[in-house]
Image (cartoon, rainbow, N blue to C red; front, top):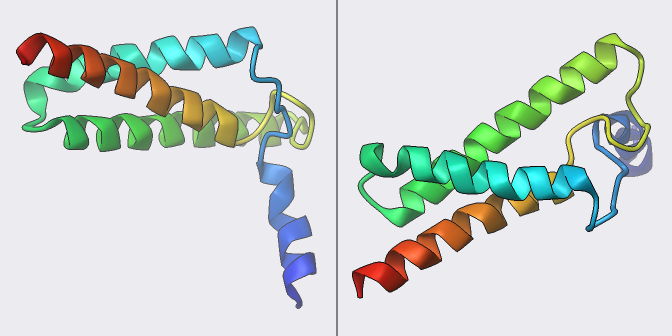
Length: 105
């Protein structure tokens, strides 16, 4: 099996939606902010809060992909593991950490 065949096998699991202005992306931005906010009392540093936020976002996206797979919706925009969605989760966490850093200095 060559690399092209391998990619065509796993590419179906990824969300092809690349619209940076959709409501879904705003929800992920807000979700990343809120998850990072909820993790603040339990994490010793901003980096660990960021990493936990990203891990929770990845678990959420994997769950969505599993549901999409069960409903035979994989490969359609909005269904699957959204890499752009994960970026927006991270941006939300970074916004919170920037506010936290700014308020503490």
